[in-house]
Length: 177
Image 1 (tube, rainbow, N blue to C red):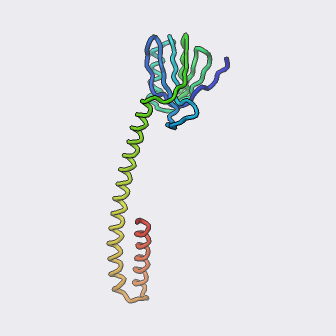
Image 2 (cartoon, rainbow, N blue to C red):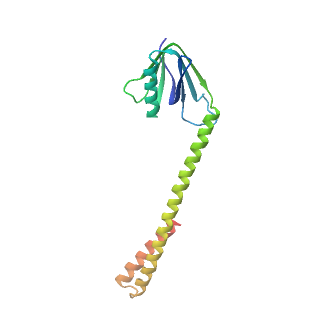
Image 3 (cartoon, rainbow, N blue to C red):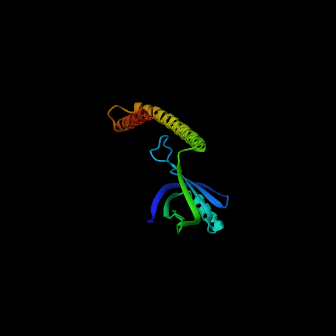
């Protein structure tokens, strides 16, 4: 059997159970109607050196980076990640299955969307506050420039400079509104 890539995405979790290891990977793209199944389950029954495998999978999980899954043989799979060498899963029997999203995926998506909305709201509030302060400072400076401009004769160099600065600040105020 020639090797072939079967999935790419993120390692979400793994657990040892029933003399094996079950691994769940996700594409990480929450398209509500994906064309291809976005979840891959790998079950390795009686894997070689289960403790070392768990350590490597945990390292990938902590890395939280994109991985590529390659099927080498019926009983061997490689998980390519940012680790120096691919994680090799060799077992008596390996089964893979592609699945659609589950309720936990939609819960996660809802949580992520809520967190992003809160971050956006906070950033927008800070930006609005900064714009408000910039408008106040600009209005105060415009008042000072108007007074200084009126203290000088029309056509004089100081009057012209103050008038130009006043027009520039008016353009800034209009841009901030």
